[in-house]
Image 1: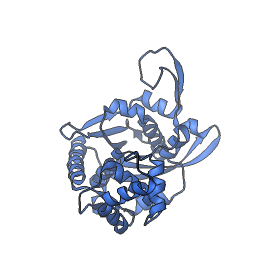
Image 2: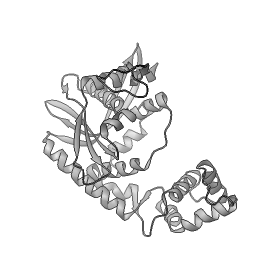
Image 3: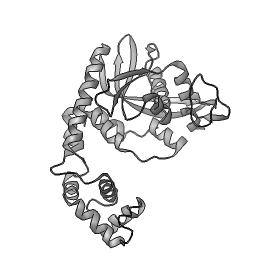
Image 4: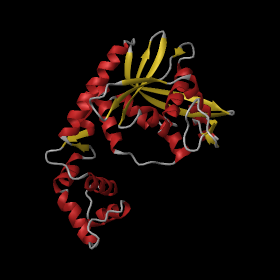
Length: 289
């Protein structure tokens, strides 16, 4: 891991993910998070890939079995019956309806024995299949090509920003880690996203406008005499045949990501559209209040 990235994670300050957790509650990462993280590392920090991941030396267990084992390993570095039982209970694994807990644990450990042994030896690193590794490399190459085509000056990766945001007279020590940033006469922040859905829908569902607004605010404080260009999302899809897309966040997106808004809609924020029911959309500054 790059030293600046280690320093970032060790530095105690408010991040955009923490603000989202305050606003919307803690959410468990899905499988797309793992693929997205692999792509990020392969594009920006590939020399350190082996610090984070281990290629599986055998066939991977089913997604459900893998989920149970992974959760059991959060309870212990070498989980036993109690840890597997706890994971099975939390994830509501049923298996055969006639099975008791002892049979369920036996089934999970038997079906995942090779994966479990690799987990013990991997010392906290994520085990990935050869198929996922090949896919991540292909998507990382597409991202690299797109970044090259953007032709931005002095493009830096894994770029930490530390600034103090003042809101309603109160100061908050904040931090952000940008996937990429171009720093020339102007500043262009960039984040890489991996998705299996329409990106505009994903951006609203996961509130990427908050991330963009928060990072933009930090960069404005860090570079007060430079123009901060619109935040860019470089997007690759689960379907590797789809082209890379580049989305630019406009001023409305950034305003709502920061200040929030009262929106006329029943379920989610959609700009420039009228709906019947009003409700509040939070911006990141709402987390400070």
